[in-house]
Length: 91
Image 1 (cartoon, rainbow, N blue to C red):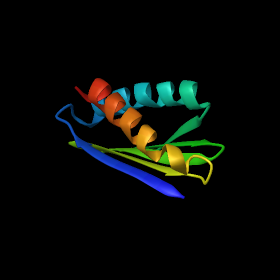
Image 2: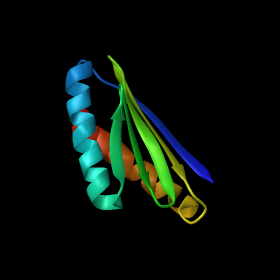
Image 3: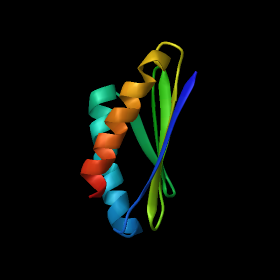
């Protein structure tokens, strides 16, 4: 099993960061057929072979994704896609 863990700072404030995290989650849900739910300031997502969390703070967002055995070889690609998405949604 592989884990992708990325933390990105922002200056959007927590509420705007939550709005943008939701947009990121909507994209994840569409691309990965994942189910997303908010639990406080954490947006959890789950699909077959992967699950994770987008934690929204006042000045940072942390994305953690745990990949199952079948998706472990794709960890580098997953990390790259998350980096691109964070660049897009947090800038």
